[in-house]
Image (cartoon, protein in one colour):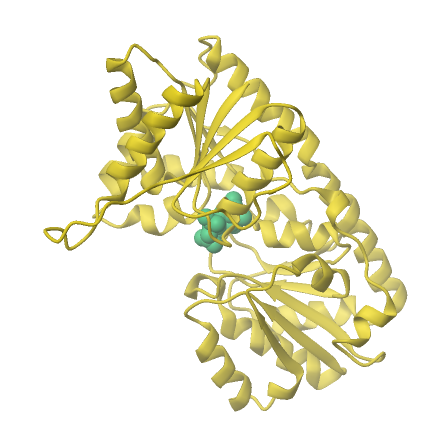
Length: 378
Ligand code: GMT
């Protein structure tokens, strides 16, 4: 199959999912053409089946804002025609689903009718998609995609509740390549913490929705009861305020800001607990990656997180903002080696429900049915 993929190239979960899916399908022998404004971080340079096409945005002094969607639609048209693509899969509705609709219309004038799959990831529906400047265009492009998938049942329901949706939306959850993750040894751990210290971890793009202050307050309460370190991976607008809050709480010496590192697997591999107290989270790919590294998760009972984490089995879910409850749960998991080992083992087992092989097949089946004119969902 010849598949076009459109995604944001950044560290966010939708770009990671799109890229890992492209890498995986490429390894299965399909031809993948990834279209974006920059090389996606996780795109495998050693996979000859995966090709990158950069969107060229032309500058012109008349414009205050350069028309990226136009350039993207043109790049899609050009790539579909040149590479004879069978299908386009766009990740994150804004602006990709809208640009894909235009590309499809243009291609029809060239006698090409290409199916478009739109995958909704989260804030394209729950936050950005709600802004009046985008909402009608998001609803329109969801209704006019050939097929639409959402990464959780919660996101599917939210989309239907928030937009005037005239079509079916399939749930295809995110996945993890469990082979990439594993436990690090004592020597690796020693780089971060003393042998008697627990290692708590958080990975995100440090935006308000992640409730970074809650991460610090939970850690501060845990640290008051037992020696521990907090590793923060990622960067974004909430990072500087977080550094200030850590100082105010007097915990700076035990909070390590690692920024945008590509060593997430190794860090998860030495972590004991993962914290994700988000305001909303359509799925929580970072939590799934932690679980694949045998790390239990303390999270908020929000969005699609209960579809990934089972309360009391591979972590705990508490109300949004309940930092005391989350700290208590963290301390319980860390209370003995056997409790931690049990939660860790159960986290690893749960991650296998979201295997890359299985979800990859689900997407391939969807593509096949659409290429052959099927009405997979609408
Ligand atoms: O909003 C973000 O955090 C970024 C966004 C993205 O595009 O990367 O993340 C969303 O998509 C991820 C991949 O499907 C999900 O795992 C995240 O839960 C989701 N984020 C939110 O819903 C806040």
